[in-house]
Length: 68
Image (tube, rainbow, N blue to C red; front, top):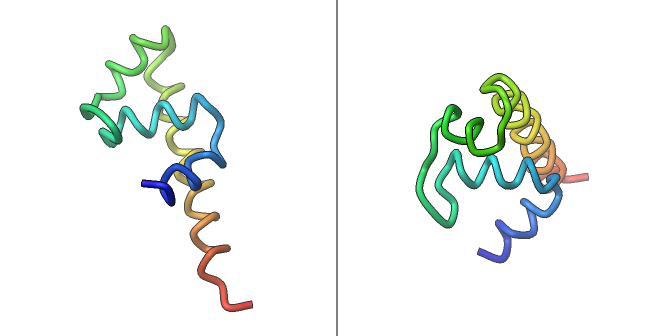
């Protein structure tokens, strides 16, 4: 779990929360609507934050596996 925490620490607190809730990291899986309601925001806002966070993590993976 340490490696996951290290990678997630590169995200903003809001991005971390949304990904943890969406993918059930440390708890139950939640829908976009459930997360939006809990945060008091629109579903599209949650989707946008999730999309940006996943994009950041993909970039992190590419940097971590590059040979140069």
